[in-house]
Length: 170
Picture 1 (cartoon, helix red, strand yellow):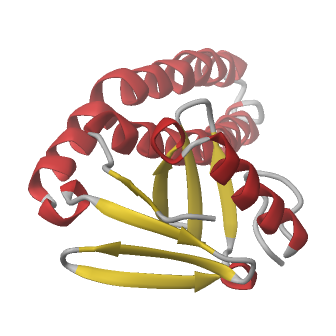
Picture 2: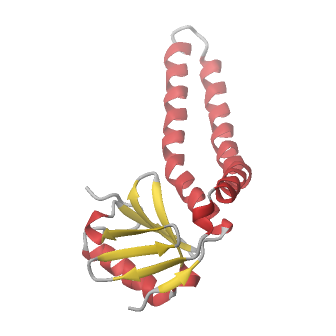
């Protein structure tokens, strides 16, 4: 497959940050559930079940409010600032694909990775994200790299043990 040149946009970077949030939200919800349970454990023996109910209602309001605020206010602002501050992410990149892995080349450097070393991958209608770690991802804008390359990447990730998006390699 021929190499393809592309650029990552600010919107692509925001999309990736929203993907990270989507994965973190269940942990936050679980934390809030534990807090509510602890309030009940303390409040009920003290004869204050209303405190437990108040904590539950508060958690039911806080979790969605926090998620929506982060998704539509905090994440876009922070991601846009990080995109503007990080000059290397705005450079033109060239993606090369082989049966063994991929390489990304840009003016400031080169990275190559075997499919077997990818921790996980994720995607939506805008980007394909290849994760070497849980906190880092290579952003591949789908429209820029083309459907054939996206299908090629996805198939090789599956062939190398990552059967579905969002699932970490064991």
